Length: 245
Image 1 (cartoon, rainbow, N blue to C red):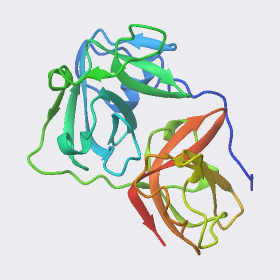
Image 2 (cartoon, rainbow, N blue to C red):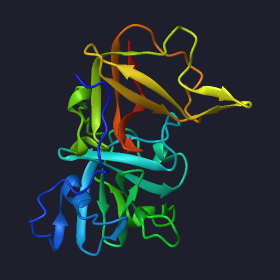
Image 3 (cartoon, helix red, strand yellow):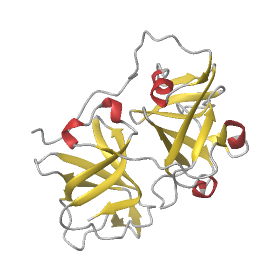
């Protein structure tokens, strides 16, 4: 088995010959396939519907949420803090995409406002949030993470909601935490997750995470998160502190 996974920058994952819908609901995977460069404006009256599976509830994501449908997931950048209050976990939302932009950020496709400067996509302003995003269900709609094995991770899984079973943290010794403490503060840190076949996957945790100082769990267990992509390799971002050892 391979000991690590790397690839070229992910691109469109849907059939490029498909006709672009003029309007109506489309899948998240289809929306992402419309990003044809570093930044692509959405000019059609199309929308996506998905379940919120990641917010800033535990400080894991900053000014962004991730939603998923049956085709995959996408990160939505919003210039507002405490988004977990507006969008509790598993809340079903609809996003009207016309007027927004798709951008490449760190090798993945994100949704946000049209860029005004050098960034590929800006954050949707707090004032415009309700213009584009609405809650569509009275109660949360549970989203089941996809069970996946490290060696099977591919382009289509970027920003997908996944569960890895029977894995261990190589750095776990009962003392080492999720994040390193440097110059008086916790900093974003990479740790290594290994499966029973010896395949490895980087786990990246924000220094602002509420469990940054928590010791890595020992033994084997299950970790739930979203697949990210950076510097030519796949990695995992834990969501909702969902670590079961």
